[in-house]
Length: 222
Image (cartoon, rainbow, N blue to C red):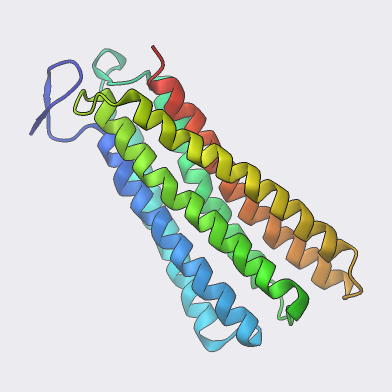
């Protein structure tokens, strides 16, 4: 039992349940990393389908958490943050996992050999997006603590947001450079189409992370 923002006893704050949903997103990053390494090693390897199935299971579990959160919200008066902001955040955080699922779907669309010229940059891109997702965890946790008055370090929380915004700018530049190289390569057009869509869906994860941060910042605005 915990005392929420308005001094009312509740079993668990809706904000804290967002952390449960975030855990599923964090797990998805690990699956994408493994999937890409597996795919590069030999197209759609035996483990790839299993990894894709695991990601689909995670997405299903995450959807259940989001539905539960939305269906069990207290009245607006008893919410620790503005309800509209909260619901916007649930959508933005859910979009991260949706984009992860779509990225893997594009990779599995058809078997192709990823040219060695793009392999390292794709691995770096996935790794950078994963790092950005990992940064969202502490930012969300600090925000939850701040709105529950358990943590009064507002500046430290803002610094967490800034790290994510800076990371997004780095990923944006890297994604554009990789897309340019893929598009101007001599590989089959179907391969170009497939790789660019995979790259864009990875960036969509990054974009949704950034959107999450902007909403979190609004939650703690004075």
